[in-house]
Image (cartoon, rainbow, N blue to C red; front, side, top):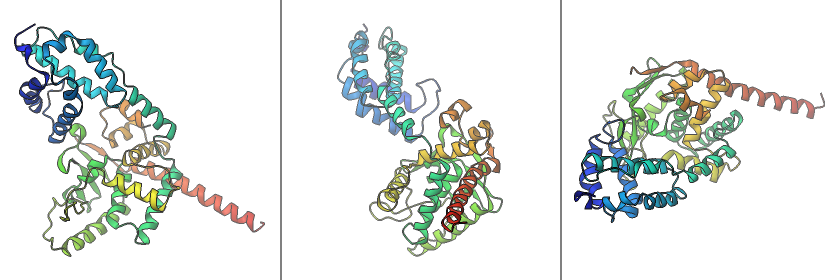
Length: 362
């Protein structure tokens, strides 16, 4: 054991590992993490790793890997994302060895044998429930929120946010981070280049930039909302909007206007619609909406390659879970998605006509 290894886990994390991490000096990719990612990482240490190991010396932990494995195995029963916890634990001891605080890393290898039971239970539950809505279930949602909009029970901003997230198949953080300079209404394109995390703009996941062609109907929806948003903000004294104006904003908890959306904004809106106005609707959240977009596009005839590009996945293997120049997503993907919805709508109309004819005795 080394003398330097007498340092506590907490002190080593704060003075050695964290400064390296924020500059991209840990892990395999050696990329500088975004501010949002750093905040999330600090949270994992604060909530999980420091309470478990903070008071112990690196030497003692390194000489007692069974203790570390036991504690993390217990945590894995309660915390689904144990994979990232194991990753940070392994990185910390790897750096400790490289920096000469311990002679040999005895922690990283045993971590590989810790399973993820909580995550597996959640995944089984999601499979049982269904990762995506059927075409008919999504049509029911579209009809419900449109009816709410028409009757003044849902505001235009929330309706447009729902439609944008649904028709782009993007991550909610990317919808939240969309600004008007990246919406080309004249040529019919949306450029997904940034995401909003912790109410701050940063790169998209994987730092992908995607150019998405949109339909004339979609252009009209956004153009109308752009005019109405400007009028709404002008009514509270906010004028002179620039291209950096976010497409979707809301008042914050202190009543300040035109603020970036909270991370759970769309989740809460969807929960409210189902709980308070349309309890018969299928369960839906923004990520399930993304799964639904991919699944219905596949059913409508889109190729796995096209879907993978539209979802900005790094490979098709990731896309199958759902079912660098910028990726360019043409109308083929959206056409496939809308084709499947149109088929379901036609089936509904045919059933209604058949029922009516039967009622009339024809």
